[in-house]
Image 1 (cartoon, rainbow, N blue to C red):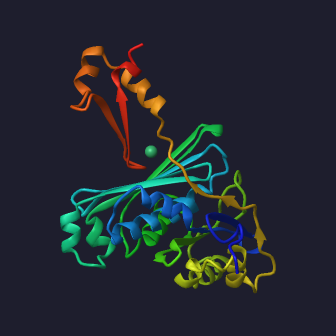
Image 2 (cartoon, rainbow, N blue to C red):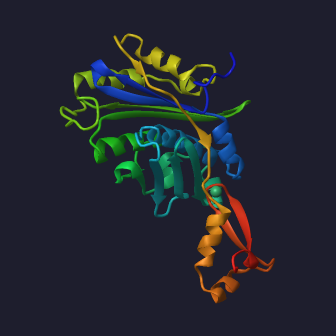
Length: 301
Ligand SMILES: [Zn+2]
């Protein structure tokens, strides 16, 4: 079966009205390859970032505001990974990881989430310019996986019972990362007070069991379109509504013109001090590991 628009680099929204549940499924392929190609990470870090990007795609595509931005940041005090940042804007994803390569090599081929992060925190920020809403929640980075950490974010920080599953692996065709999130939102839509948001709500328990039964192989199966995946999980439900899909891609917003405008704000003497031996001011974008050489005469007129 050839790839269809619902197989790769896509996010699909779902509601199950009778269960007061909503969800999303994502699968990423070429977008992950494009992001990882700019870095030179060891396999453990590539897998971590691929899963984090699947989570970012899940959460970002929950935004109703088309110009909304979602940022996911994991930060630690003294972990092998001390910083992981991913963000989402308008279907575009980017991300990077800062880590200690020597300590990672000592940790073996399959370090646990705790071995990677130690004592860390997961911060999730939603910016919605249309409604001028900015919302940030922070939870300890706990559990065996990034998916579990995200689940406790929603349970602790937002009091929304949620289930999150993530998987990422590199195969012959490149990287694949997949994930699902399902959430209990009684009374359904926004603007209405949420009631009965309890983990033991029978309607939610049913959805959680079904959503939680998704297998890594299904999340990563490039021949299984996301609507078929959702249907496989919830085929006994009376009604499953499939929402419009969102196409996903790698996208960085670093911009040489913007970099020039920032440098231009510095006094002339300070600008001169920034110039390296090769005659350029070098500015890096951490997200896409791109180096911008800027010449002084590009900004002094
Ligand atoms: Zn960039």
